[in-house]
Length: 87
Image (cartoon, rainbow, N blue to C red; front, side, top):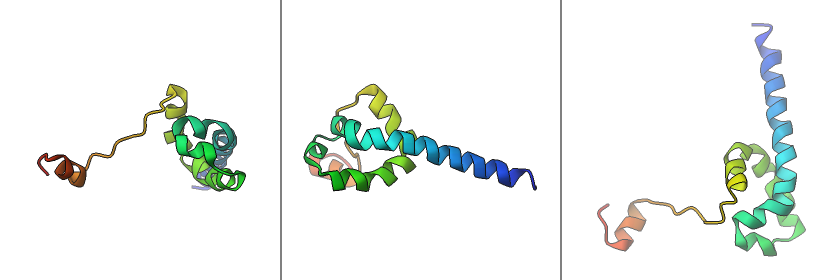
């Protein structure tokens, strides 16, 4: 057990470091590609999204690499009911 804790700490540090390396370019360059509304975002907005992008980098990285500009469409009971579909 004494060997597991340092390994987990190093893995958490590696995750955080990779997240920070991804989040800074994402906040100042790539977020514009994923969200057109972010183009008008201020520098303060970009600084605010860095922690979230650093934490969620494994989910954001594939979208950046795909250059996926389409917004994801949520499919839930409310949207289906609004379209006239079954809930």
